[in-house]
Image 1: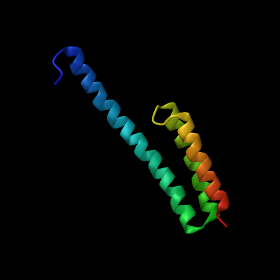
Image 2: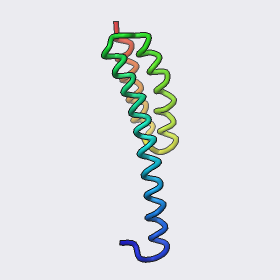
Image 3: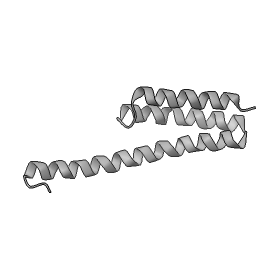
Image 4: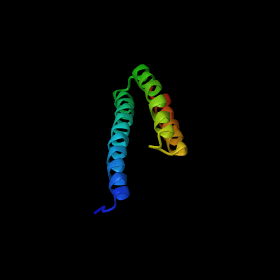
Length: 87
């Protein structure tokens, strides 16, 4: 348990950061899930629209430190390829 005032403050800050990061990650996952559902339904237009909406959210996650840049790029690339493959 934190005893010094500095350690107590860091613990409070960590709780706040954890809550913010968790909310951001949840929001990004929601956008990605919408893309997955559109792909599963076979609707190419809906999948393309969902992908366009998900891309800025994913990249915002990079700037906010939720994802590494290459991870986000890999996710976008794989989703784009799957959307393109929808007939």
